[in-house]
Each structure stands twice: as C-alpha cells, then as structure tokens.
Length: 111
Image (cartoon, rainbow, N blue to C red; front, side):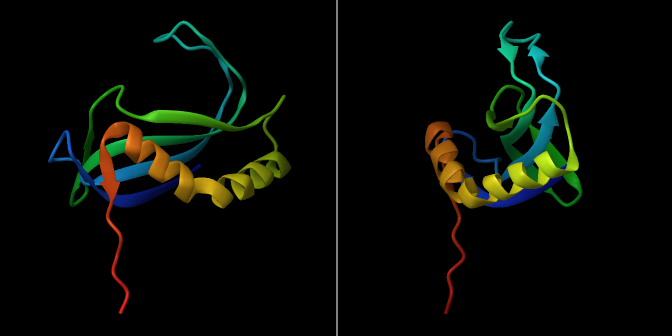
C-alpha cells in the first residue's frame, strides 16, 4: 500500500542503512511461522534493510509488525482512517522499534 524509508545506523549490523516502514492490510488468520492467530486489519511493518542503488536486502525475521486498526473487511474509508492514525504516531513507533532492534535514526541537521 505505502512504503517509506528512514535512514538509520545499526549497532548490530553495519550493512543496515534504512528502516523500511510499510502500511499494509492483512487478511488475518493463522501465522504459519508463529502459529498464532493474527487479527484482520491495517498494520505498520518495520523492517531494517540495506539499500544500495536499486538493490534492497534484508534479514528474515528481523522486523516488527504492529496492528493499527482491526477491521472486519477492507474498505477505502477504513484504510484512510487507519492511515491517518498511523501517520500520527509513526515517528514515535519508529524510535521505539529502533530502540528494540539496536539501531538509531539519522537526523538531518537543519541550518
């Protein structure tokens, strides 16, 4: 649905240089990797990635996923509302995820 990249530095992996944030709709159901039921809804997914030109690499199972809004079905209205809600706290979530994953946001200095 939508994808954003934020520059980061990583304490654990020096090749990681961006945090990819995806806003997605998930139909829910059984997660085949964790065997847990996931609710249907709109999620923010945070994935540390290495970007070099047009190439992008990542390590499996290194990201985090948070539900923004649980819904019974996908709709344009529900997507707009969930996107607006996600936009309100994406910076705070990004800092929280970076703290958990051992990385730091690269802040651009303003003159």
